[in-house]
Image 1 (cartoon, rainbow, N blue to C red):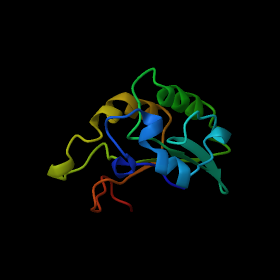
Image 2: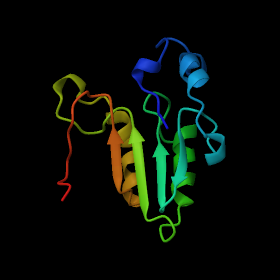
Image 3: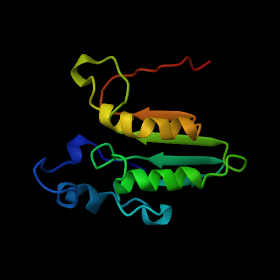
Image 4: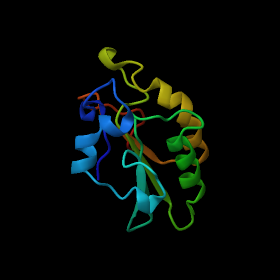
Length: 139
């Protein structure tokens, strides 16, 4: 299961659908099954009570956007008694110490972080910065 990043954009000057033509052709994800209207963000369940949400850092995410509305509905539908683990993946990290990428995910963080806090998301994985970093001790 994958999510798109800045390297999947063919052009920064065209609309979303054209910008991810190769990604959408090669990586068809189960977005329709999760109620998403875009292959750029979706969710799925894994055996053992895990719900995984793949968010699109390089598509619209602001309050009122299709992705934002989809995320609200997806989070609201999770039964935490049946699904104790919720994991989110984004391409651009919302926090990092790499000076070359500071603030790359800030707009998305401002738009969506509170939703994840309220839903008690357990873990967020991010890419973009080609280095390992964590914010809370794992033990």
